[in-house]
Image (cartoon, rainbow, N blue to C red; front, side, top):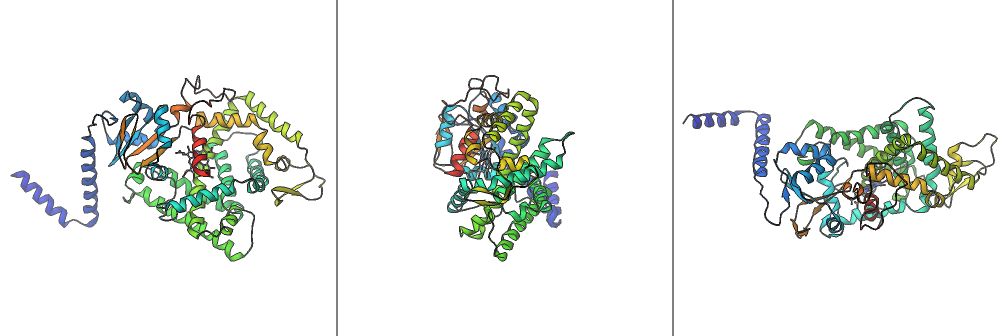
Length: 460
Ligand code: HEM
């Protein structure tokens, strides 16, 4: 009886409370129901084992310390495949060679859907960067492939080198810096240069503002913003404002270019000349800026850090670039703005000695791509050791099996690249940075899985 009275008065109090209280109570009850139902999971015979001692707080490390969390999962379950719940979502983590092959070849496993819930730093605007029709995604990939053709890349090189020179001059020639700030910032500038337009790339205040906004998206990505994006948490509201501002900056730049009637030699111009819908152009720039800057920025920051700790590889890299310069002697000054058929045009010789950036800017793309085995090995080794990425998919159906474990329709599937990149059988002493190690090419989907797979997805 006292309980009934208590419940009744609680119900009356709730009904007479304001919207804010009712809303909060509704959210708490909803989450409680989810937690209770989630914790009652028991796997069937062909289901992957669940993480032991389920607690929703285990999920926080999934977002914050993913590599450690997944490793812990393999150890705690003693299995090569296990599963856990992210609120109502089932997530299945797979490893091993046959699982890897199945993961990367199964038709129903969708990358875009996987990224949507398990990532979160991409600014989401419905119809622009999220909920895109397959046709629109394919178009964005096609345009990205265009950017990477020889001609646009060759035209970009002098600009990228000039941007780099500017940034490095700002660093000075002595003292300390944190590569994860300074190098990341430089790569952000280079990504803007490569994927958007000169109006933004040449406005340092605007680039700095965009970096702050993308950092807001990145840092504001919490389990709550990804799993319950409709919940108006402060982080979610900040993310919404940041997304809105990024959208405005990008659309403003596009409209200004259109209004100016001037044609420039950059990615925005290529996109506009292709005649795509405006939303594709906006989606391309908004989505790819972060996709490109984040992975490339962390890779480059680690690369500098490794070179700092390995003077022998630093010397080898410097010797390779010097040999390249010697094999392609500098002839008069290069104007970064003007290019002709992919090669920089030369203006009359200037009395002042050319900057290193100008000298490097005259080296053709083919030489960078084919005559730099040391740089290639350093980049490959950095992506192996320093990028414990996970590939993420959602099974759009039908249900399938990986290593005899069922992957239901709607489930998310994860493959950690560390499974192969840090496998001591393939890479002895796997945490050691050693660009001189033998290339692993005999393992299916094995070598530099990240690069191989993203190339496959982005550029085919
Ligand atoms: C060091 C540099 C980079 C690394 C290590 C890297 C790594 C990755 C990885 C691991 C994936 C997921 C692949 C999968 O789940 O199968 C991915 C996807 C993707 N990356 Fe990169 N990436 C890099 C640079 C870039 C750049 C510069 C761009 C854009 C210009 C880019 C655009 C994308 C896109 C669009 C996807 C999704 C692919 C799809 O939708 O099919 N990435 N990347």
